[in-house]
Amino acid sequence: MWRAEGLAARAGYARLAVISGVGTRRTATARVAVGLVGRPGPRQPAGGPAARMLASVSGSAVEAVTEDGAFARKASSFRGSLDPGGPHPPAAGRYHLYISHACPWANRCHAVLKMKGLEHAVGVSVTHPTWKRTRPEDPADQHCGWAFADPARPFDSGRGVYAAHNCVPDPHEGASFVRDLYDLASAGKYSGTWSVPVLWDTERKTIVNNESSEIVRILNSELNDHAARPGLDLNPPGLRDELDALESWVYDGINNGVYRCGFARSQGAYDEAEQKLFECLQRAEELLETRRYLAGDQITEVDIWLFMTLVRFDEVYVVYFKTNRKCVREYPNLSNYVRDLYQTPGIGESVNMEDIKTHYFTSHPHLNPFGIVPRGPAVDFGAPHDRDRFG
Ligand SMILES: N[C@@H](CCC(=O)N[C@@H](CS)C(=O)NCC(=O)O)C(=O)O
Image (cartoon, rainbow, N blue to C red; front, side, top):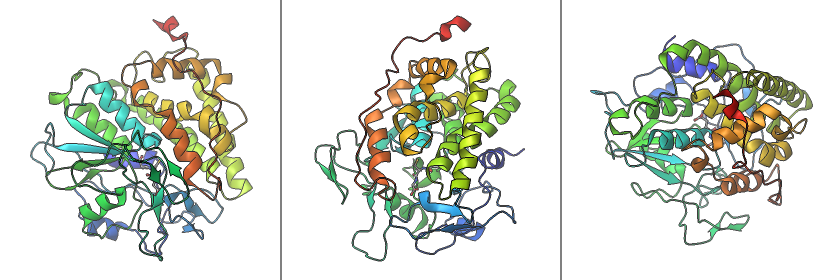
């Protein structure tokens, strides 16, 4: 199967047609309009339930749901790679990663960047965790999203004032919002989700890729001449079939599953997602009884995928996304596994729990109108684990 198509299909990006809070439509036509590079976009087969945007205060993707009230994640639009001879050749200092510490998809990329030792080759900017109006001067445009902020000054989201000390401003384009980067890359024509992560080409002033599963692979293998750890391969050729199979249910049931619980707008949609989530967590728990990592004795990209959900689970999702049937700390293997990964060089350093908690609890007023952030449970991911038993 062709690579990006396989990733997109595995990510279950299939059903969305109408997606914008301001009534625009993103289709294959729109992808052409923004001048996207070489690879086909995600599959969008006909016949699935049409998604629609409910009346919205934020205009954000989090409010995209099907007729059944199920959260329907949108496909990423920019799907380029760093190919020698292509529009974005591999180079040190040319590419920049825009992330939020809070976003599990962006966090995947940041962790892999650190694991590979690419800090000196790829710059990183970090948004404020709290969403704010991105076009406050336009009353007709209610979109709320990722903003850059001066780390030395308090950040006013319009609903509260927050510290900004974890923020890293945009050194290249001086963007105020992630949305500005999409505008710049598309001459204002892009009408999809203004999401992180974004891998940016500072020379061509455009987005190379905004799909985390593909950025992870770019960082894993396409900048190896500049990586401190070029030998680390999180997507080894001998494990690709195994990873395809694992990633399918880890993405659908767990990574996206928690969002399908939290952003469901009907009891039925929540029940279906919740049932599947806990079946998949149990499946992972059982697999990790006999192996240190999901694919065996070697850490791979699917471990990073699972980790990013597990590390947020007890701190955020159990309360915020109503995934409270069981906490990760109640699963012996998952709880030891998440500590093992946290203590793996590069991974724990990429986790910023302050930003994670601040984002979720302060960014969706329809879910948490007063923006109160719960204090607990303050999990100690640095505590000892038993995973050394596998050698
Ligand atoms: N398919 C994307 C999904 C990224 C994504 O959903 N990012 C969220 C943050 S966790 C976002 O930026 N959302 C902006 C919005 O919903 O407006 C990927 O994996 O890279």
